[in-house]
Length: 101
Image 1: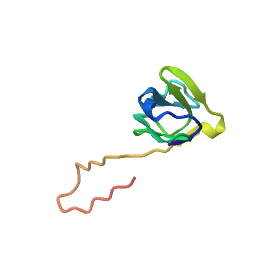
Image 2: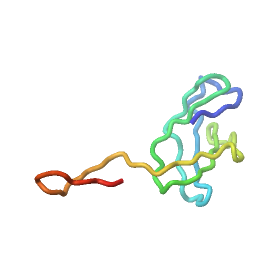
Image 3: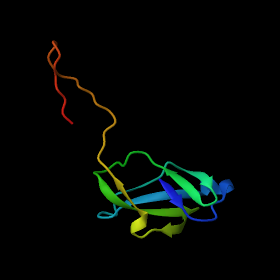
């Protein structure tokens, strides 16, 4: 997720974090795995898979432990349903099993 702003310090990237909070349920949230510096006006929030059901989330940027930015509607991110592993362990020995996702 690329965030556009101003004054991002490449020497301070370890101090930034991005927080995603479900807009409908604030108990569901996650922090970015890391934040990468793109340039002085852009950072990139690197995320893992959203661990909950698909949801519209509100993005906030934190510097050290201080809230640095909380967005309006332009700061919302939608996480879709997804899967990363499929393990078909049952089926006929002759094959032909159809998997519908």
